[in-house]
Length: 79
Image (cartoon, rainbow, N blue to C red):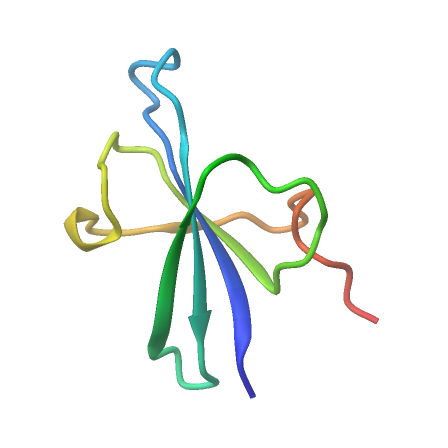
């Protein structure tokens, strides 16, 4: 089963820097199948999980850790 995850790359020290949004497709074991950068913030809640890194990094590969954002407005509700 595949799931979609939203990764938000932001900068906590410089809030004027624009956040980057990356849509990640992964399998049950957590292996990344596909990464797709988004042009803007998504409008509809369609993601299984939302993760954020606020160190000001520009790519996922340069990040050391991510924080899970529980009950984020872009996370779809569990049914």
